Image (cartoon, rainbow, N blue to C red):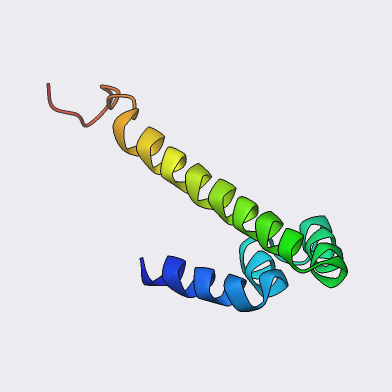
Length: 80
C-alpha cells in the first residue's frame, strides 16, 4: 500500500518517473515524456492509466493464482 501511495505522489509531480518505475525504459516512457513536454496534463493521464492497468493486472493475477490452483496429483509418495 505504501508503494502505491509513493508511486502516485511521484507521478503527480513527475509523470515520466512514475511510468519508468512501472514499465521501465521503453515505448511507454518515450510516449509519456513527449506528452508531458507538450502539455503536461496528458502526461498525467497517460501515467495514471498505465499505473491503473499495472495494478489491475497484478490483482487479477493474484486472484487467479490463489483460487484457481489445480488440486495436487496423486503419485509416488502421496497419501490417499
